[in-house]
Image 1: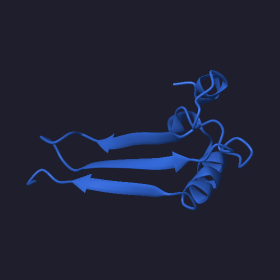
Image 2 (image 1 turned 90 degrees about the vertical axis):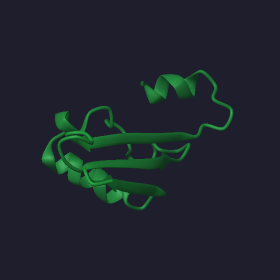
Image 3 (image 1 turned 60 degrees about the horizontal axis):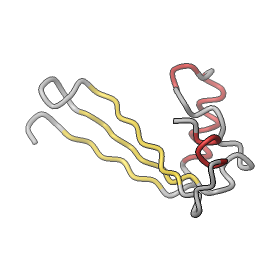
Length: 82
């Protein structure tokens, strides 16, 4: 999703939640999922370039991590036994 394009379309509330997961799925090991609320001024806060963390430099990824941790977020972990 292109957040800037969607925002430009006039989302009245301009609320965006980013979600991602990592893991091999419920049959092969633990899965970790996370969600973070992006405020309407996310670009002004430097939250750009979030489309694919694998394409970010380590330095940019670490900077975004520090910033994201200051925002409302949630993390969940599911194990095979669950």
